[in-house]
Image 1 (cartoon, rainbow, N blue to C red):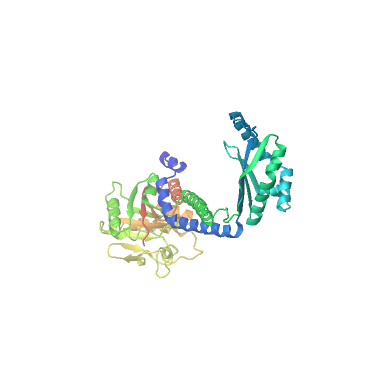
Image 2: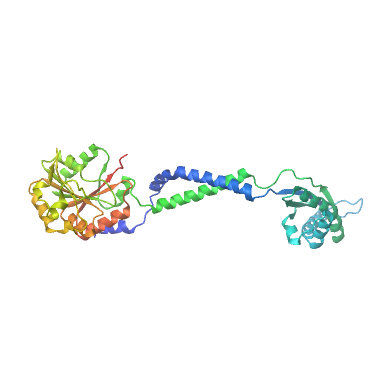
Length: 406
């Protein structure tokens, strides 16, 4: 096996342009899925996320200064340190007990702290206290109670400190929880990222042959991209005037490709005098064909169907228990005999034949074409077929990409 084929088989490459082209097919599904995630997030927010209300107050903490004395920078610095101390003190059990007693509530200390936060406002002498709960009136009651009891409690603990309320709490009118629109947008974004990532992963793992460019990664030439009759005529001309013509040409369908040599045979017939197509595909039970001859039911003279530009031997009827007919001497003798009467014999060979029959049929050919139909076979199928053919020294003259019809 040549080094070029070995290298191309062992390397793992990601063609990002091909990947982006394949993602175009998933764009509508990605958008639809992202919208659905957003709607589900909005619905979940409405059902599970209860609205929360907040009420807060500001405490002004300063170091006590005697009447008539000016406030120095040291006094300001001391006041800021007192503000930091107040943040710690208002979370103690004594402070929490006083606030609850004034508000007329009773709850565990840790449960209270889940509804309460305190922070010193940066570079100031202020402390912000915030209460949050699903009950707007209860939040205000806690905040008002804190405004009444905490200044006196803090002044009693912090000697030389003066604490006053600069902003009294009000009854909260609107919930502060994230809006359903924001939740929906967040769900849309998360859904889009996950679905796009999933589509990229699927695109990387999907090795189906979708474009003719996928066949350029293999060490044999891409002879044609088939779509119209003119494309078949161009391929026929390349084969007809090749420097190494193959009198017995095999057309091998990769994977479950549906392309066959029936469209190529008349194009070759227009350039050559006599072309015969032997169809090894399918099970045409309506008329005698190749399988009938190989099983001894028919003679070769009765099999040939004459068309305008080529002759054909159809597949015929194959019984389930007849065994590997293509491996028989009758097949070899038939091809040799017909080669004496035709300028070119084309064997149309399906890739899903049993391995023994497939390789024996390919060995009868002077060269083979690998036909890959759009979206119907994979690079893995193509590699496996090529390895099998090269293991029995069958010459691969090139590949053909057949666009999907319709």
